[in-house]
Image (cartoon, rainbow, N blue to C red; front, top):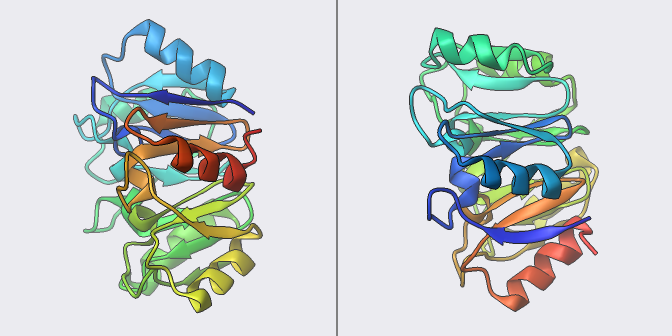
Length: 221
C-alpha cells in the first residue's frame, strides 16, 4: 500500500480538498491530469475532478463509505449529475450543517457522528451508510470528521483525543485508533491526509516521523 507526499493546487492540505473511499476519489474541478493520475495510482481508485457547491473544498463537504457518498444540499445539479455516474449511490442531506466531512467520521464498518445533529439527520446518515453508529467527540469536541481520519485499516486522530473516546471510536469503526499530526505538527489529521485501504496521500509538509505514524496506522508498508 503506497503513501505519497502531494498537494492540491500547491496547497499541502490535501484532505480539505479531496475525498476517497474504497471505490472512488473526488477532487476539485480543474485538477491537472498528472495529479489525478498520481492520486489514482496511490489510492487504487478512479479519481474524479468535480468540486462540490462550486467549491474546491471537497473534503470538507463530502463524507461516506463504500455504500454511499453523502453530499450537502448546496451541491449543484450539474455536480450531482456527474457524481451519480460514478457508480456509488449519492445521498443529498438536507441539513443546515453543510460541512459533512467535518461532522461524520466513518468507514465500511461504522460511523461516528457529531452529537449536535438532529435525530432525523442521524437517521438519514445511518440509513445511507448502512453501518452501526455512535454519536461522539474527539477531545470533547463534536467535529469528529475534522479531528480524525478513518479507513478500513485504522484511525488517526487529534492528539487531544481521550482514552475513552479512542475506545468507543475503535469499537464502532472496528479498527485501532491512534493520535498523530500531519504537515509538520498540524493537529488536524483530516486536513492533510486522504486515505483508503489501498493507499494514502499526505501533505508535502509532513515530516518523516509523521509519515511513519501514518504508515503504521493505515498499514501502508
